[in-house]
Image (cartoon, rainbow, N blue to C red; front, side, top):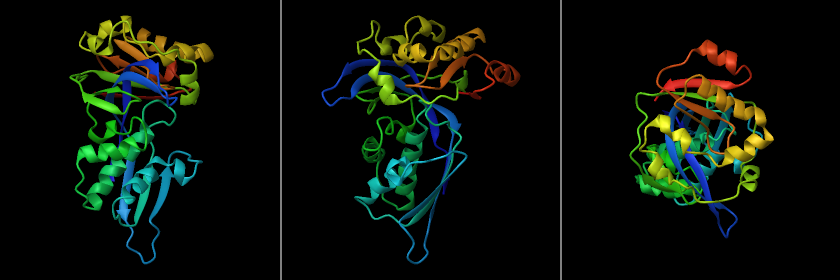
Length: 276
């Protein structure tokens, strides 16, 4: 069985308070984007087969199984349900360390596939509960519809927001930003204008009031990253922002952009674009 885990962008990201457990409460809008990985899971019916085998392609993974979110998804379900032995193969297109949720998406889509393969008949709500134990934004990818996220990003509510008809450009420099480090430089505060009041406004008005709280500290450490955002605006983006804690940026445009221009402006970056 093959599936295609998508990624997400953050439309606005406000860090509103620090929690007693050391984490932070935030408010953001997760929006699905059709840049996808390729995930294949097949049953291994050989005698004495291991619970799972896994392989990754087009990316390096240096951690152990305990750090692999797809394996975490398998183990989370196997704790409560009988699963077959499987072979897991993942081809990465979504950049890692980008703030696009690629790893979380892979895990959530693995939960959905295993649910089907093993005929567990779990509901989306059930799968979201498992996903929430794997990563803060993992539950979003179970349904993959625009959602307003609060808490640590795990409390989701459906929101009326559509970017259909627009085009998106993603730009990721060759920089990895530690989420822990990004949070350490943010001073939590509630926004002057609530995000849910900004979203219904015309997109070309978002820049005056919608922000990503991580940008200030990231730009202070990596000044050239602000140039990426500014270039997207100079290309004609209606709105541009860093996604999550970075390091990927996105621009929302009325029409497709020239691939030659993207290559010229962002020569050392991963770039990708698509209709939404």
